[in-house]
Image (tube, rainbow, N blue to C red; front, side, top):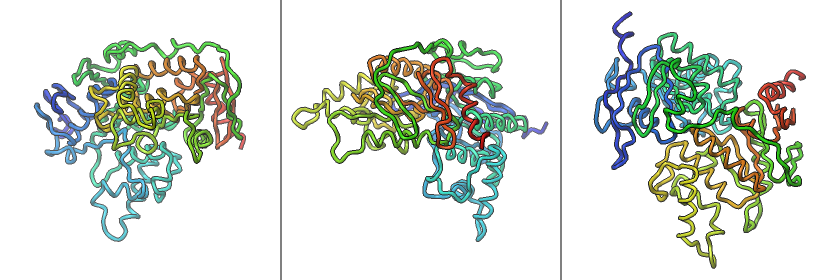
Length: 474
């Protein structure tokens, strides 16, 4: 083995990063070697994104050192990052987005070379992807955009990637596409590359990681071979003991009258939790969008909203980036906080602070900008906005993207509690665990409902059968 192959790709020694009084990272030592697949886990706000930004050169350490085995910078060392907050330019094509990070592409025929390179990367990682290299990014689904971002991360781009950091890479992918990615990660590491894999889906971490590093409050609190951890031990190390998915039983309940039905056959009763499932990109998000618009579009809004919405694509459909955390939460309750047409600021702040505590948003001041939060904490703010609203219907489009396992369990409990009080939920998710929390599930295939499941019939096996049934029939 050459010295080049044996040296760590990156090594941190007692690295820290402070933002004023906030110690986002507080003395972390970590070496990433060729062939490593490191599962990096921790709750939202534990310091994962800060650690990633130190490794990829986005931040300089406040103290400690960062060294690279080849070259003096992350770029020269072949470090790539695929962020949870997708960074593609929506008005450019897939090939043109590759060109942004591949500056050696030049000349009159650079587009042809860019098309060939991104197609090759997509074909290697996601066989059968069906993505056109000339398609503008804003015409793609969020799952397709995530696939493109991942393909750009692994693409040669003039020099081979040596370390690829994947931040919640499967959060918008269905199980089949996620399996394709995990298979590629295994091949990449077996060939001498390295991956830092950040995910709140612990099953994926155990499937792909050779080592696991647990962060809590900016410190490494546990580290070791993946085989040395159990799921319960990992969650305990993270600092929040969440029940196993199978421990949360969905008990039979009485529901009220049917309160909505679409032309497709999607229906919900008062107090019911209705799931939408199936392979990603088969019409679930569109069905929810049409339903939400039917409940909210009016020349003059009602005093009490008929529906609230929790977006999975928070950058496009969720956060108001120029506003504070407080304003992002309270926008759904301004009418309830108003007297004589004026908002009572004390009441508004009280509601935001109450939901900050209830849902565990990691900030010491809700007047801070919403973008000061990690991605998972921004998603918590969107949940707080919807649940604080008095709307009788809550529509959720794959809302758990980037939310940690402890918060997921807390949100499941909140949803069940609100449903028991008569609120209705329509919930699209790419995670079978979440769909199995529902009272009734509609499985989509090719923009149609291929099955309606309820009670004991809501199983992963039956959902998968219904997801592929219409395709096989055709």
